[in-house]
Every structure is written in structure tokens, then in C-alpha cells.
Length: 99
Image (tube, rainbow, N blue to C red; front, side, top):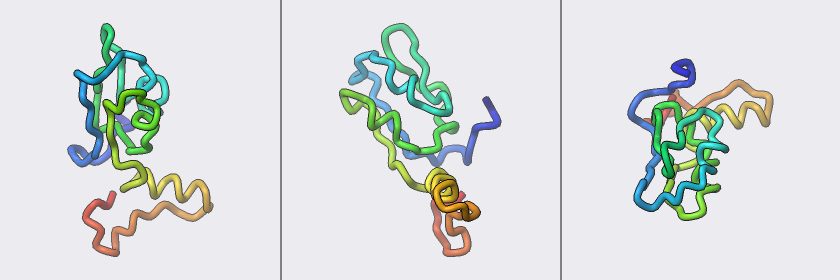
């Protein structure tokens, strides 16, 4: 799945493994397979695949996951799907979190 990687090292995804109860919802809802189940806990298989959609955090029953959903490229892509306009994360506007 290397084709799903974004800019390395910028994702806001945080995961607290000791808090995880092993429900597996994060692995089920993640569209880019950032999470995988290993034994009775989730693990982050590749943070740089994360597009910061927020599905994992919204579905975690114990708040073991946090992510700033709707930032960067994910927000631009979703906006383009909804409006039919080309994706733009305002790179010309000097946004340092730009794709």
C-alpha cells in the first residue's frame, strides 16, 4: 500500500496503546489500513498512510486515538468531492500544513 502514503512525518495521529481495549473498530473503519490488530491490541502499521479523516478516533470507545480531522490534504480532497472543484489546500496562501 505504499501508493497511499502522504508527506512523511506530518500526520497528527496519536495512539495510546495502553488505553486500547482491542475492539478492532479502528482497523475496521480506517480507509487506508493505518491500523491492524495484533493479538488483543491495535497497532499502527504505517502512520504516514493516515489521511486524517478522523474515522478511527470517532469510533474508538475509549479515546485511545486522537487526530486533527479535516486538516491538510484530507480536507482538500473531501471538499473537492463535495463541490466538484479541484482539490486545494491553499498552498499559495502560505499554509505551512499544506500538501
